[in-house]
Image 1 (tube, one colour):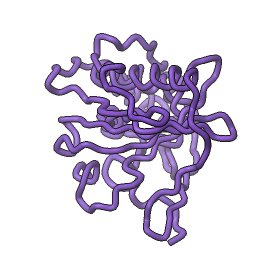
Image 2 (cartoon, rainbow, N blue to C red):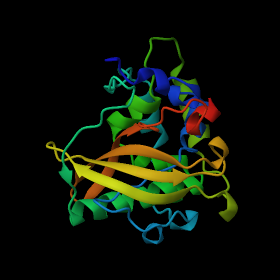
Image 3 (cartoon, rainbow, N blue to C red):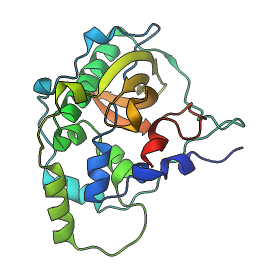
Image 4 (spheres, helix red, strand yellow):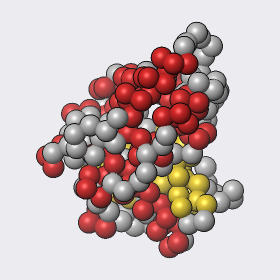
Amino acid sequence: MNASYQGKRRSGWRIWILSVVGIASLLALPIARSSAQDATPTAVLSSDPANCITDPISTDHMSELLATPVATPDWPVSDGGVVVLPTGVPSDDAELTAVASTIEQLWSCNNARNKGAVYALFTDEAIQETIGFTEAGSWDAADLRADVAAALTPGEPRTQEEWAKIDAIVSATTYSDGQVGVLILNSDPLVADGDQVLDYFRFVITDGIAKVSAVVLDPYDLTSGYGFEKAA
């Protein structure tokens, strides 16, 4: 099969089209973490909501991004239906440090229910490609901004029993363009019955700061009804 990876991403909240529900759902996204060759000990990275220190993205900027139509990214898949991820070389210590810091903030701010902080850790392009409009449609700018403002308002932090957790950084690969792809084993008691899942996050690093440039959920999962498909 030479089709793209659009089909799986179009199920459930993974359609990633703007709505209050869509924005809230992405914040339930379990965050995966990866390290170079061996899985990084989970004790190294914290998902404690008290550690969320990222300044949130502004409502105006988020609204502008979401109102700008972009194409849905296509990921190639193998004949067996598995997403074909790019190849590269093992990431170095500096790259791993930058990526690990952002992963920790992603999970901590997710558990803090601070959507604005989570999205501030994404590039503009990643926001547009994950939850931006991908089809033509009519909408009102004032209504859009109001919806975004409501969705970005922080909620009550999760209790410790509800924390999404980073279970292992499985791998980290640096590509020819300097971006870093990581496979993160993670679990979230509030998503998909707490199934442990392996997700792919790609990061771009600028001046030592890593931001999410792409996400592929369960790239190797071929089991129907498993993991995030339960949330569809």
